[in-house]
Amino acid sequence: MGFTNSDLHSSLKKYFGFSQFKGLQEKVIQNILENKDTFVIMPTGGGKSLCYQLPAIMKEGTSIVVSPLIALMKNQVDAIRGVSEHHGIAHVLNSSLTKTEVKQVKEDISSGITKLLYVAPESLTKEENIEFLKGVPLSFVAVDEAHCISEWGHDFRPEYRNLKSIINRLGENIPIIGLTATATPKVQEDIIKNLGMTDAKVFKASFNRPNLFYEVRPKTQNVDADIIRFVKQNQGKSGIIYCLSRKRVEELAQVLQVNGVSAVPYHAGFDAKTRSKYQDMFLMEEVDVVVATIAFGMGIDKPDVRFVIHHDIPKSIESYYQETGRAGRDGGEGHCLAFYAYKDVEKLEKFMSGKPVAEQEIGNALLQEIVAYAETSMSRRKFILHYFGENFDAVNGDGANMDDNARNPKKKEEAKDEVVK
Ligand code: ADP
Ligand code: MG
Image 1 (cartoon, rainbow, N blue to C red):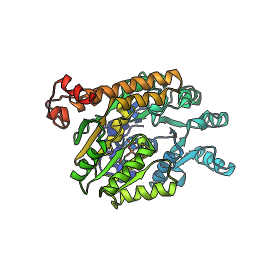
Image 2: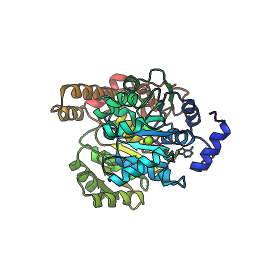
Image 3: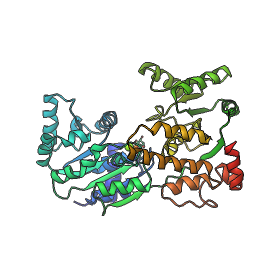
Image 4: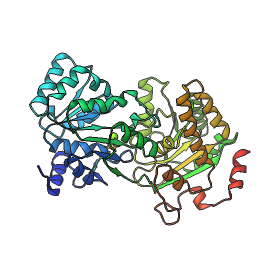
């Protein structure tokens, strides 16, 4: 069953209402339609879901989508149900379903209505589910958030490690699609190895965000004053300030308020109602600034965040990239300012000291990379992209002039002295 490019475009329009593919989507989808293993690496917001949803709808059989979070699955299923007259086009199979619901899901799969079956890895491990799925035509298995397979990723889930052996039991030569926004070569190697995807075609989008300006400043006792000054210079603009601890979040939010900045705090210690109140105040622009722990941001899609400040250095370059990535989504200005003091690194090391040795080793290695980023005199953008295995031309590349080091080159020693004091 061959599909032409015009089939692809008309399905895109028909099912999703879009007139154009984004980035590498079309190439990815063509590869999947040819039943080949496919590895997709695209930044968050790049449009990875469509890469498997569209071919799933177009192909014979049911696709299995492995996803780590029930909330993520529910969102996707609701969205996909909107594109078809059949509610059963997408289902979630998990342990919270009643017997009747499970029966309905299985019926929809058997009758070929279901094109996307979302499962958590735990559900896929269940013998009864494996037995059932063995007997139905499957188009492919998509492993979303595939970095969960790797201890080097930010969200390791041991259950992801068993996926390959389960997929093997579901049938012969079922194509596998791995998708992630984690661009580090180590994580990618783990994914390829664990999912047995050595022959997969790899589609990697650039992680360069040319509209973001990267800056690192030494963190002194006056960090609060420095932050207040920065925010006041950017009055009326939306910004996020990340702090490591909940206590610091509350203190800094208060300090900002006292200084006439409209700010709210946000961390996982507040109850759900308070959290969503503060989040909405930020989204609705009743306040300019949210001071938050990393609990804030997942799934937040405010396009005009103009700055992201890190009061404390994050635990890896990848975290830093994800967190700063919330700035400038609309393509406009996005200032990413990190305050850095080596003693904060020691604090992070101490946090890890109770953890298993292997985890500590990985954590420390990641930490050394972010230290190197903070202390580098190289173009920050080049440094980040190099970390993601990407070459960046610091002279002519897109965004070449958009970081402190690129604008004010300084000698290495000078840079270090500044940080030490
Ligand atoms: P990712 O999983 O890579 O983070 P998503 O799949 O959640 O990204 O997609 C991000 C957003 O992009 C969604 O709102 C989605 O509807 C939108 N999107 C995806 N593909 C297209 C397209 N071809 N045209 C316009 N918008 C798209
Ligand atoms: Mg996604």
